Length: 179
Image (cartoon, rainbow, N blue to C red; front, side, top):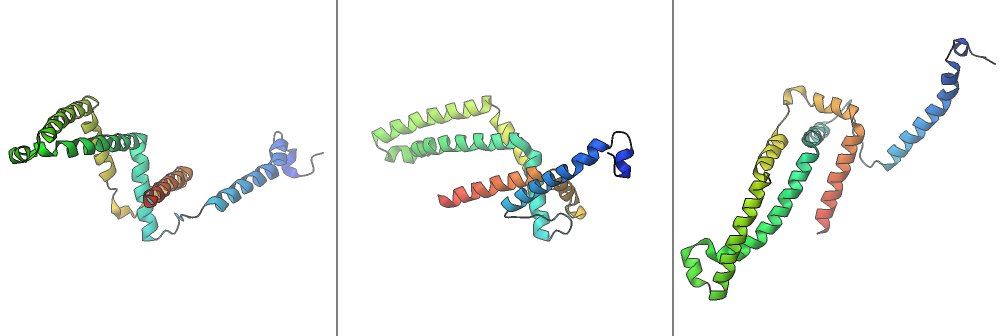
């Protein structure tokens, strides 16, 4: 029953029997991942562009989901502010208000009130502090003297997260190019 020497050691038979199946499953998984990747990152012998990419992805991963949520909140606020600021433009100066017609002045006054309200809500939600912290997190540049060693090591330990984030970035760039 135990034909190989390692199978004679107590408790190793099941491991030895399962080893070919585990190896086959791991090989299939690696082949599937390789087939779906259009970009490969070699952390062992990276070029300067690869190191820059890994460092940028590391910064985004370290900033985390909170940075993503802050960016979404900023996009929403910017969309609301754009409309309101356009309507409030005649209120930007005394001469502009004099040149505006009666209806435009009313719209401008209403827009200024709405603008104050939007800014108060943003302040209550702590958006300025979130924007400031996210900016600091994203602008934090790792030490260049280590030639991206930290990012390369982090990539090797969290490869799937790096590729997932890279796919998100590429997908969002494609979506922007379509518009």
